Image (cartoon, rainbow, N blue to C red; front, top):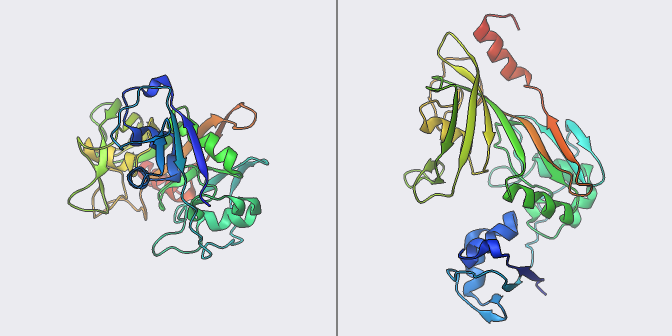
Amino acid sequence: MPDRLIIHVNASDAGERLDKVLVGHLGDRLTRSQIQNLIRDGAVRVNDAPTKAGWRMQGGETVALEMPEPAQDPAVIPMPIALDVLYEDRDIGVINKPAGMVVHPGAGNPNGTLVNAILARYPEIASMTYAPRRRGIVHRLDKDTSGVIVVARSERVLHGLMTQFQKRTVEKIYLALVNPAPKTRIGRIDAPIDRSGADRKKMAVQRSGRPAISEFEVEQEFSDGSALVRIRLLTGRTHQIRVHMAFIGSPIVGDRLYGHRRQRLPVARQFLHASILGFDHPATGARMRFEAPLPADLSAVLAFLTGEKH
């Protein structure tokens, strides 16, 4: 039998569409299209009455949603993969993800992912009932992006962390090498992002997209015109930093999808590293902040630019 979920709509949601409100509450558990399908199929009721996805909320309503049964995916198996663990307790694990590791299984990457690894390290994650391919995953990093990522060891903790991401209270700071350097040392990019109509593998800045905000500050400039940039994410859209930096004319070095196909520097992947992650511990409420050092391959690029031996 499907689970029945009750959501109480806050006054702050007044004027918002029903489907958008549900996306805000359910996070990564269901996509917007899945939610719209459930509404269309009568699995969502507002104040015990069926309604449409575009219904504007007034605030104070009670929404009852029949959650679909989770799909079983026996292909996702625990794998004893070594992890660089920055911190762990009974509620969370904070991992320094290496470049080249996919976060969760997908087409072409059924094994060797972070999910396979955390299922082996934290067996209790297997009991989570939502999205089997993404058990324990709160947020994601691209395959070729290294750095700090937090995983949840229970469904309760997962939803607590997801709420912080949705409310934008999580501190997310990245280091990126771009070329050419931005025109200003400090900047804010407020440009919505959606999937590209020309290439479905890419995202793009589009008026129809979801809000996306990035702030940057140049930390160091080099003689070849490139710059090391510190970037703070205020939202978390797919490929956000890569899209935003390319949008302002400063694509990330090594990014062959959004940047230059031919790279002048000795870099095998995009120079993008999730340096700092800060959040409130979902059980204790204590503010926590973790930092992952720049990995050797990216440090070598900076050494090359400054003429140091590495």
